[in-house]
Amino acid sequence: MDTRAAMEPSPRVLDPAARPASVDIVIPVLNEERALPGCVRTLARFLDAGFPLPWRITIVDNGSTDGTWRVATTLAGELEQVHARRLDIRGRGAALRAAWQESPADVVAYMDVDLSTDLDALFPLVAAVAGGHSELAVGTRLAPGARTRRSLRREVVSRGYNALLRHGFGVRFSDAQCGFKAARTDVVRPLMRKVRDDSWFFDTELLLLAEHNGLRVHEVPVDWIEDADSRVKVVRTAVDDLKGLARVAWSMTTGRARVQVRRAAPAPAHPDAILTRPILDISAFIAIIPGILHALAYLPLREMWSPATANLGALLLAGIVTVTARRRSAFRAATRCALLYALTTAAVLCVPAEGAAPESGAVAATYCLLALLRWVFSRTRN
Image 1: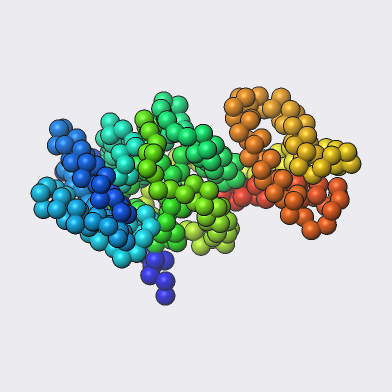
Image 2: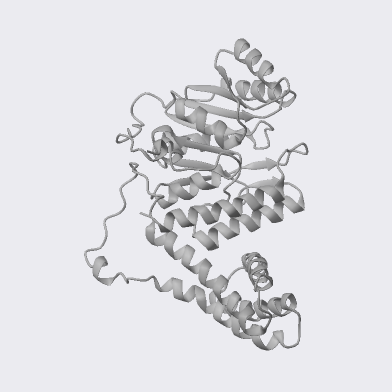
């Protein structure tokens, strides 16, 4: 029997009128002996200066081969509210899973050791969860009010990835992988039983499962500066994330992504809602219309140009119609266009048989797949 899938008792809902919720801030580290002391001491001073909730800091060394564990134990000995634990396996997800699963706190959070995110956003993040407004809270670098400094490559990859989540899964959050999150402990534990990834995709999978199961995810715009010494391999991580998305989509389709958690009660439905709700969401069909236009425009253009060039021309023609009809902002339209071009061009180039007809079919199939994913996600969300 899969222990991760086991049911947990009905979780306790935090009562804001009761004692203040305690917060456990986890810092996962891998070979960070130089950055760790400054991070922990800076965070501890910040919390000591007036953080209004009971707190502790947990350092999780997951597979370091340098002096990180020695530094972690030294800090835990010097600072009363700092704790340290060690794992033999690597992966940010594994570190968070281990720490959050055993934490005695009401609210669990985590942040990256590089202090890329400004600490002023920490209390708004935790307060949204501790006060009962939401079950999870995440920092976002992409919402209005956020200020970010990072490389162009990382900016493009991040925006493209999150655009894929919005258009493919219909999610409401804007930034899946900002290293700044908090959650109610009694809610996140049953969710983690369903999360399969132990690396960088852990964050995305957790958030997708949360929204899929009707939980509220609150966003806090943050000030964020990229760490020049970041260990993240952006391209490799993006490829692993795409594989993870396909796996999560399949689990949602088959019903295996359901988790028994207590969440805020939804607004009562109108008495006639069950009679007027269509079996299939009309928006799923509307989403396919640009794909049909794209595929039809591809056929004549392919007679003159190469597959990649013809696909770009067809996408632009379909995009003009879509933008005019829906009045999207220029930036949003450009982002969507770039994402669709990447996906449809990949589909066209993967078609084994050359020719305008099968390539046009691959374009249409890509749109249908994206529309299906979004429909499945929206219909199965509570």
